[in-house]
Length: 108
Image 1 (cartoon, one colour):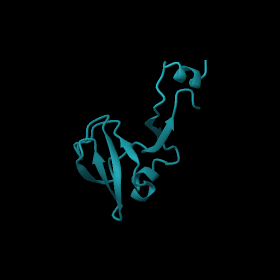
Image 2 (tube, rainbow, N blue to C red):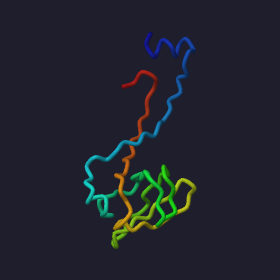
Image 3 (cartoon, rainbow, N blue to C red):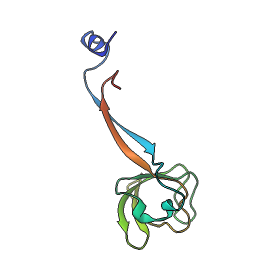
Image 4 (cartoon, rainbow, N blue to C red):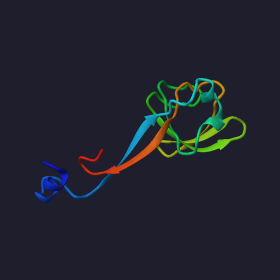
């Protein structure tokens, strides 16, 4: 059964859904991750462990809002607060790029 058939039969909705998917950025080396200019506004960062320096907990996500010249990033946390991060010491995980995918059931 194809998508159109199940939609016409009322088994699934015709309404499209936009899904935000995060994918690892594999183009950053360990050294690259310590330099603010290697990030892009909109990158999503995920903490694999808690940070005493920032108070950000393990598993937390933050989105890059701005990149500053003194090797700092301003990020927005999930609760809407912003923090300035200095990348010289504690950042150990690559950012996740944003990929927006709009599609219907059965799309590739």
